[in-house]
Amino acid sequence: MSKIVWPLAAVMLVQAMLMVATVTVPILAPKLAADTGIEPRWIGIYSSLVFSGALISIVLGGHLTRRFGAVTMSQMALVISGLALIATASGVLPIITGSAIVAGFGYGLATPAASQILAKISQPQQRGIVFSLKQSTVSLGGLMAGLVVPVFVVGFGWKTATFGIGLIVFMACLLIHPLRRSQDDRQPTRSATLNAPWQSIRYVLHHPRLRILAIIALTYAAAQNSTNAIFVTFLVETMEMPLVLAGVAFSTMQLTGMTTRVFLGWISDHFISATRLMGLIGLLIATVLSILPFMDTSWSTTMIFLFAGLTGAFVMGWSGVYLAEIARIVTHEDVAIATSGTVFFSFLGAALGPTLFSLILAGTDNYGWAFLTIAAVAGSVGLIVLVTQHR
Image 1 (cartoon, rainbow, N blue to C red):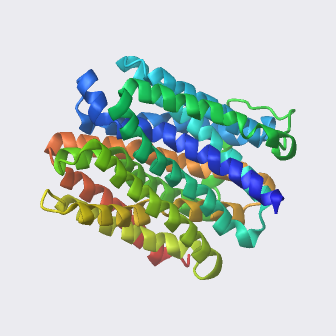
Image 2 (image 1 turned 45 degrees about the vertical axis):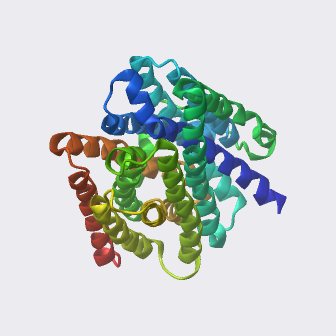
């Protein structure tokens, strides 16, 4: 049992801490805006910068994991993202901008490493639930940040809160250090040339089933990261909700996303193919995002929280299923490379989505058009996947 439990726990810790590092600034955006003069609605650009950094590291991550080891790369991811958050506490706009890219670089290093560890310790029939458990802690990190960050900001100011949370992320690398001996399958002679990283993307583009997963990941990640980036600001500006209460609503969304990831992983292991399930999820994402524009101050707090939970269930619950499917359809030695190449498209969507959202919002001054555009794209991909799955 310990063969699975401790490595899985370490991977889950890493994912949770990295999620905390990436959503801290979007959560405190209304307070940061007061100091910097940036309109909170432009916070989508910050999230896009985070995943622009992740795009750089994800194409390196598979090869670096093979060369230096999965636990070592996970530690590097925590150190880099933690330091980036600490630097953000300076309050200097150019440093905040650069730190977003650096934090994303750390985030991208961890995903291939996590997949390499989980593919090693789990059997094929377990991978849906195991990978979904890992992905559930992405939402757990968001839940923790939604509860803690607003309280820290109100109590100590946003700069002190950001510095302290960055230090916690940085220090988490010490907790996983004991696993390096058992989990670092290193290939020290492997060369990490500038040409090698792009092999992971070519690998995906030449693999029919991975191409489908790449399209799904691109679209759904755009919807997920747009929602994560703008949700607290949307509630504060449109619903006139206090920051702490908006943070709790954000945490509610993450909680249902976390539990749904595990449930959907179990479903894909036993009852329905991952591809068909992903198609259905696309339609559900479109449905909930199409309802968000109709929220206004007439909604009760209870209704807002219920709908936040529903949004989290569908918009945040899909990623474990597709990561497990990658591990099912390629050999063990290719898991890190296949994950790196496929997640590149996920991070590309995560980078493009919030920027598109912010640009539509700036052009129309209407959250509704932005939500409906993202919903239409996700729903279209889900429908196409369902219609063409047998091919």
